[in-house]
Length: 106
Ligand code: AMP
Ligand code: ZN
Image (cartoon, rainbow, N blue to C red; front, side):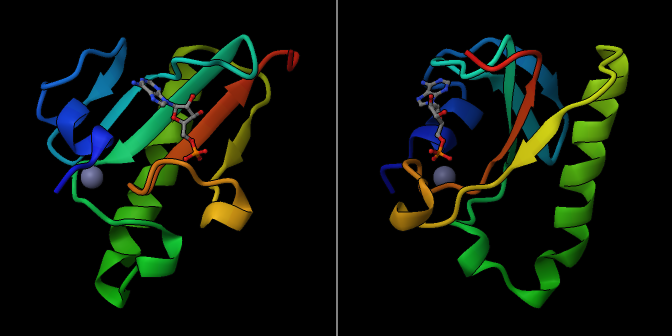
């Protein structure tokens, strides 16, 4: 499977890592849309929210809690969490990811 985020997770492509555990990797977006722009990615390959199954319920809750943890560590007072779904929803990389944005957008 030719998936950039799977390559990043397998350390086959370099990124600026913000958080790493057995289920999730978070790294700085290469083309930030705000002063803080972090992508939080489940290590399990799921193409998009549209491909989620009922068994992914817990994983999706954990994804949000990782965002909260990173935001707290960075002492963010407010932030946006965005998930793009499908080409018409602005999704470019077909591996589910949560955008964490903070600071004034560019
Ligand atoms: P989306 O449009 O929701 O699929 O978001 C994909 C995001 O991945 C975009 O914000 C890109 O800037 C970002 N991106 C693409 N390639 C890389 C990379 N090699 N390292 C970090 N971020 C990337
Ligand atoms: Zn993948």
